[in-house]
Length: 87
Image (cartoon, rainbow, N blue to C red; front, top):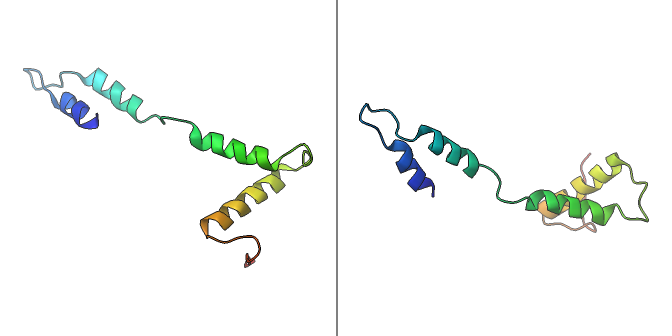
């Protein structure tokens, strides 16, 4: 798709100006938009798994701490039993 629209964008009129400047800019603007909201939905899902009816008074700071800790554990291939933090 990008190759095609680059070629369309490179087409010139007789006076050497771009033949389709508006449509090519519009297409490139549209193509840069995210195709899904899966990343955001994944974060909301993780939040809902942690902020349950039993833990409904969890503060925003605590929830952020839990999310950062879970991400750190996941990214470093560890588990909570062998996690050692350097403070």
